[in-house]
Each structure stands twice: as C-alpha cells, then as structure tokens.
Length: 216
Image 1: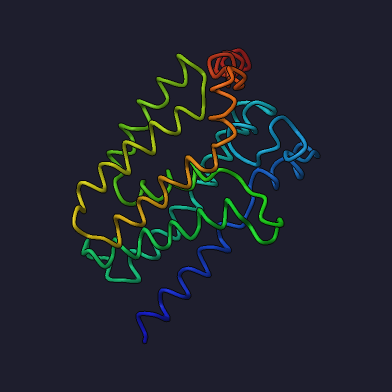
Image 2: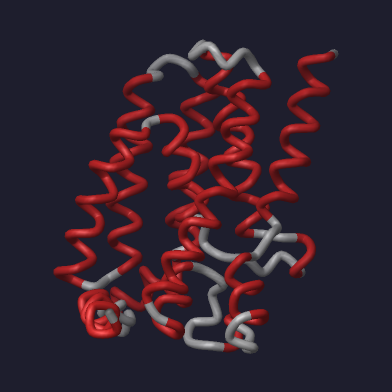
C-alpha cells in the first residue's frame, strides 16, 4: 500500500513538474513574445534556437533537462537510491511522468513540446557518461547535417537501446524505456513526414555558433 502511494505521488508530482514550460516563460518574460506563435510553434529548444539564438536555446535546453532530471532523482532515491532495480524503476517512472507532463501539459490544454531535453535529463541521472558520448555524436551530426529531429533520434536510440540491454529481462524498465523511445518518434511524426517530403527545416547550428562568436 505504501509503495503504491509513493508511485502515485511520484507520477502526479513529476507530471506537474513537466507542465512547466520554460520556453513559454523565457519568450514571454524576456522577449515579450509567445514562442508558440513563432516558427514551428513548438515550445522547445530548437524553436527557441531558431527564433532567439543560441543562448535562448541553451537556456531552454538546460531548464527542460532539469525537468527530467529532478523527478528521475526523486524517483531513484524514493525507492532506495542504492542502484537496485527498484530504484531504477522509480527513476524511469518519475522521468517518464515528467516527459508526459512536458508533452501533454494540462495547464496548456495538452499542447507541449517534444520531450527530448527532458529525456536527456533522465539519462543524465541514469547514465551520465553515456549521455555525454551520445550527445557528442548527435551534436556532430547536427553540425554537419542540421536536422534536429534526426539528431534526437540518434541520441534517444543510443541511450534506450543501451539501457534495454543493460536491464534485459527486467520488464518494467524495458516497458518504460520503450515508452520514452515511442514518445520521441510519436512527437516528431510531423518532422518525419516533412523529411520524407524534403520539406524539413534545418537548424543552421553553425551559423548560430558563428553569431555567438562574433558577439564575443
């Protein structure tokens, strides 16, 4: 009974943490605009980067990653914090709930972001070294080819497959990882469709980095 109550509180609390939309907050309070009415309309890192530059994009990335990391940490320690299977189940339950809250926030009529930064935060707690490796690979791809959706697929696929192999046979974790993997592709379904049509927007990350260098 106590275990069930802990899971319920973790899921609800993590979901509402995920509801916090930092892209909306930054764009409205700093830029005095609404990011959901700019570019793709997505309140996330890449749309902030395209419309407001590298610093706004990075700030959004960091804050959204924290939305995934904090619930994941809470879940990890709530169920032992000792590296046991139970603690990792708690980690992924908290993290996934935050991602669902980010993607489908009730306070914004279920219109949220795509959850990649939140998932990054979850894996920073679970596998920090692997996150660094996967992030570098995805970043290099993004610098060369400029397709953010594909970079996200590379990043999430590397991490979820590794963790699924690590916890093979542990069905709850396998299902939670599959949910994160599925959500990533589901939330990018329009990007996939545009790529197939040759109409996907590029990030032009190198151009943003050059602008940042010139300002210094």
